[in-house]
Image (cartoon, rainbow, N blue to C red; front, side, top):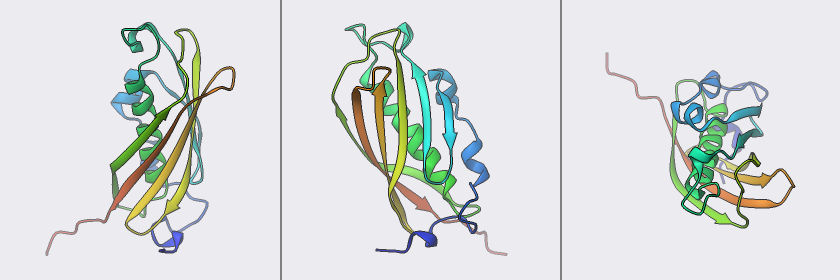
Length: 149
């Protein structure tokens, strides 16, 4: 396995500034980031009516989007300057529903940080602490493309 330091920013404590950029989908969902570091990204999201499925509970697709946003942010926090990332695989297990009016809490941590890929796991819980979903995703590390002179 590649040494984790190969894919990460030069300073081990430094978060790549790109990780601080908010996406339009994060704003649309209404998520609030509560922690951002190279080793952990966390956020919370209120379960609102406009995010409900036809059963009137929080949509599983919203939970998957939440995890994807956190995984992409976590990978971005660890990128070398000028590099990019994209999700190439995502696996979600659902364990419990989320009623409207509740809040979900998501925490994303690394399973692998390599030179060409990173793997992140996002644990999503309800306000009562019950596990709602577990998401594992693989992020491709895209090197800086330089133009010939």
